[in-house]
Image (cartoon, rainbow, N blue to C red; front, top):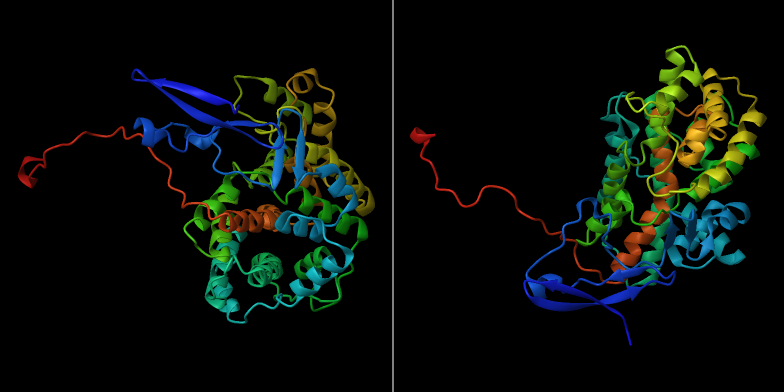
Length: 427
């Protein structure tokens, strides 16, 4: 006998079915609540509301677990590369050797961006934030790719995926080139996807850019760790916009805008801004550790703890090693990064932070890596977007294939009741 939840409201009793996910997560199905009772639920921020049933990502914040399609993030970061994980997240299974090779080949077919896109990027000032430029360029891709994707046609859907993976990486790096005043680069089909990122970003006409395998490996892991993260703000935005049957580029553009916010993808940027503030004020890490523990002090230590992971961020454990390897390999001597290492060392042993499980999170370590590579702080969220792209695509695809209804949250109106209109001379 299936379990139900009993609701008593205005003298009537109603039963609602209990849905249990594959990881034993229970949910009360209230789809018919309003039809039966005339009432709705109120859940600001949707912290207790499930918007969908998804097969993509499992996250357990209490236990520090993150899995894509059933595979532990630790195994994927250790044994797979970013395009393997992208294929897994989007299509549901790890690719065979031939499928992966074909996937990379097919992505390369779509890496050229229409030259007229340069007219759009030329319209932005150099001071424009890269995330604003990226959102606009992603949306503009719709104009150059106007055909509506038939999600029920596997070939069309596959081509749309490859096109999005190919073009997004290029325009993401163009936002940096615009900011720096550099000529725009093109994808090199003789290099891998992550290596191409470094080439697109840093190669100049004055000489070839030689990538460092330790750096490529660290970026590969970072992109994997950011590939999806369940129904977060930007992912929910992509699904919400896509539920109106808006196209893939338009939906992802909306996701980019949502990711831009400092409470979401801008967190790693906030880490570096904090470190720069500490450096500007003397660089005393111990002083700022004390400020962070003082309840009367408004200062907050960015990059420690996580609103979802109540124990530890499993992604941070993986990327900490990569961050250490990058700093060691590049031999970076940067006072900002030295402050970061002091804060990290202190927080890992300080009773205040340990007892509250305020460990360094993935944003802390990703910010350190990006800083070491010479990536400007304003570009940090663009880096996040490149990694998150497969998740956005997968979530959009899943929502459309399952024919989910258009998103339409309800509200509880708390404004004025009906009022008589006042003529102008009586106001």
